[in-house]
Image 1 (cartoon, rainbow, N blue to C red):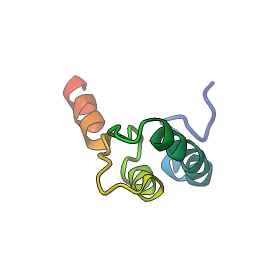
Image 2 (image 1 turned 120 degrees about the vertical axis):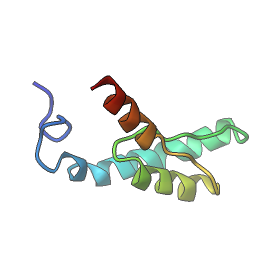
Image 3 (image 1 turned 45 degrees about the vertical axis):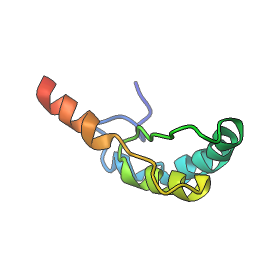
Amino acid sequence: MADRATHRSAPHRRLRLPETNAEVFAEIVPQWVAVAPGAVLMVVTDPPDPPADLTRHVAGRDRVPPTGTVIDSLRFRVQ
């Protein structure tokens, strides 16, 4: 069975891992920027906005598009 913190049916699943995820983003994003300074960074997460905001801050960029609403729209279309 999937970890209860990440399983879609787990209560408050979106609120269980933000600190850990923030640590991962804070470590990885500067590495991406160093290797590919001109790359477009796109955040594919659920929920979409907090990790995208953190990525903008850590990367020093104005625009980092989140794709959460696109993913939710696709889920809705399939359902």
